[in-house]
Length: 254
Image (cartoon, rainbow, N blue to C red; front, side, top):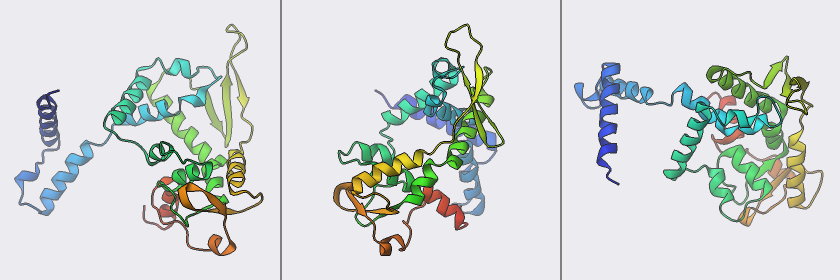
């Protein structure tokens, strides 16, 4: 396929951004404060729109609405969901894959290794430690609530049909469809979630011991119970992933 039309679109898009901001880097001396400010303004305009951000959120978490009314089948018919799928397909066409996707495709994925990727945004190296507290944070009710809030906000911004989830004083309610289509949907309180216990059980099985507070990785993602010295050692160095970003914010570097 000829790349020229695409390149032409890019040039036109860049020209429109320059006109919209009223600033062009070439209008100022190379490396000057004004030139850099113009570049920042253009880059800011190229950030994803709120619509695309919401589309990714709704497409990526549609499974949350299973057995609800409206359900994910209703969501899949909306334009914003289809846009989310289009963005996903564009990522795949460009070969844009997450660290977790790369890890899962590597052939040596484990439960502990998967959770390490989610926590720190990279594949575990030999000697890395995954702690129970890391898993507790990722699968605990606090982050679950945050994910639901993002989902609800995206839904209410982009859709007119009622959202099947709501949060009241930290409690989650799900709008459940009746057993028969003619029955009126009803709101039910979601039971307290402790997914982190199930995840840690899987990690303990891989490490071969129950009641441990952490695991240390060895070759090919295998893990063993962490020693007290390893548990008390320095945290994993990362500013990515769910735990890495949290640590970054805690240090005041966000």
